[in-house]
Length: 241
Image 1 (cartoon, helix red, strand yellow):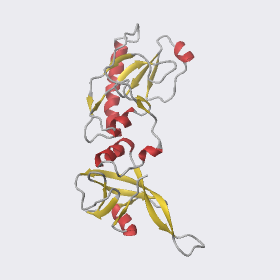
Image 2 (image 1 turned 180 degrees about the vertical axis):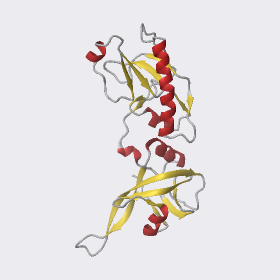
Image 3 (image 1 turned 30 degrees about the vertical axis):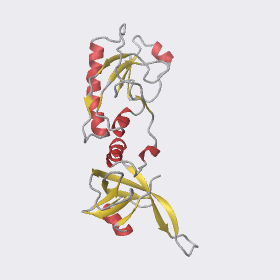
Image 4 (image 1 turned 45 degrees about the vertical axis):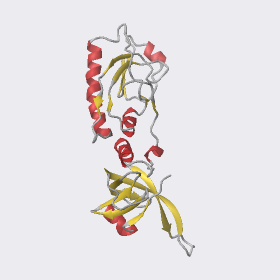
């Protein structure tokens, strides 16, 4: 028997057919919801209240298209969960469900379960997904950070070039880390506007602010908000795409 857990490649039909008991897949969602490569990230980015784990047979030609043999109850996603904590929670649950499936030999003469959840597709995450839109809410952006880790925005900067008398404006990528969300606007009025206070950089979103304390601007090392503002000033704007 083949057992796949977070395996991103389709296992060939001829290999599965060569096995006495085929294969099983442990998937960290309530299939068919979030079929695909990134179920944990999508559950967090969509700020879902719950998720779960599914054990299914391996389909010879389709990802996450096998028969559902066992599915967990709804598992609460805590307000402070991020990818690491949710992956750990679902991994432990998935291990228990897999053991139950094997002990009960559900793979013999499978009796597929009918899922109560609608189909949705969780495509593979790309670097573009980590880009911030400041017109989103503070919670939406924070949940993107919880799901993907470091996120990024853009800033216009004046750059001196060789053989040019005047500096030129360039749009540089700025990576943000150590992010918290807040409801207070801290006097900021436009999304993307930021101000430095209390050792953190506060950035306006659609409905509140985010604060960050780790910043890496293009061509610079990662630094604290204090260090960044010493170079760039305590007020400014980040750009949305």
